[in-house]
Every structure is written in C-alpha cells, then in structure tokens.
Image (cartoon, rainbow, N blue to C red; front, side, top):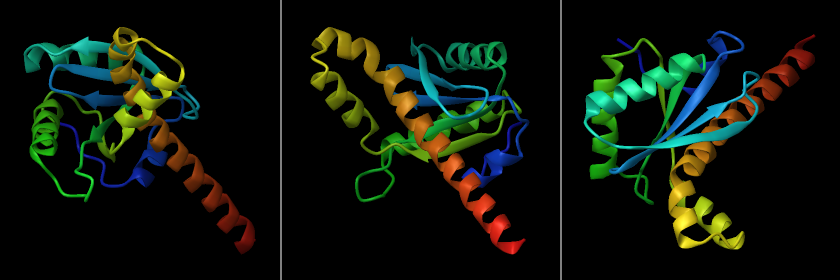
Length: 167
C-alpha cells in the first residue's frame, strides 16, 4: 500500500533518474503526463477514457511501470477559495483506492486554474474546439506536473544557497 507524500520536499528522497507521473483526474477522462528522468520537464503522454476503477488503475499502473515512474502527482481540484468540494472528495477516494494497488508514493498538487490556463493557451494557438477537447486533459496533467518540477528545482536552488552560506 502506498504512503501519501506529505510534502513536495519528500520527492528529493526518491531514487534519482525515476520519472514522475502527473494526473489530471476528470469524471470522464484522465490526463497523463511524464517528467523526464532529470525531473526538469513535464510532457503530456496521453488521455485515457475513464471506465471502471479497476481498469483505470491497471492502465495507470501499467504506464507507470513501463516508464519507470517513482511517484504519482494528482491534481487536487480545490475551489477557488481553497475549500474542498465534491470533486476533491472524489479525487481523494480515487487515491485511497489506487494506494491499495501500488507502493508508489502519491502527492496532491493544487490544480486550480490548470485547465483554464491550458485552454487559454490552446485558444491563443487557434486550436479548434475538437482539437482543444483532444489535448486539454493531458496538457493540464503536464501543467500540474510542471508546477511540481518547478517547485523541486526552486527547493534545490534554495538548499544549495543555504549550503554555500554555511561553508
């Protein structure tokens, strides 16, 4: 059974070279993104159509194994005021069930406005409505994951600066 990561700092203790997988969990689809092995860049991987939980979990964990994933990052759909609504409850339930099927650590990341930001970018790029629908979930997963990667990078820089000062 997986242990939920309590803080982003915990990721630094994971095996080097392992990828992180970002997930944008929707009611009908799951957007999936992967980091590079250096954990600098998030790239969209695919969008899967939701079926039964068992099938969804199997597909996610098969992809995680195939790509050498060491942790899962799930977007947490908080309300704009930071409160938790029904979508957060559904996400937490999904994670509770998924954690019973894997030893991979799982981290939540605030996903407020991720889909809106990606949609705006696609509109600015003059993507058709059909093309936006095809891309938005996996791009939102990449947006969520990139936020985590940027935070990891900032923490590493901060730690390096503290170490230099103490020498």
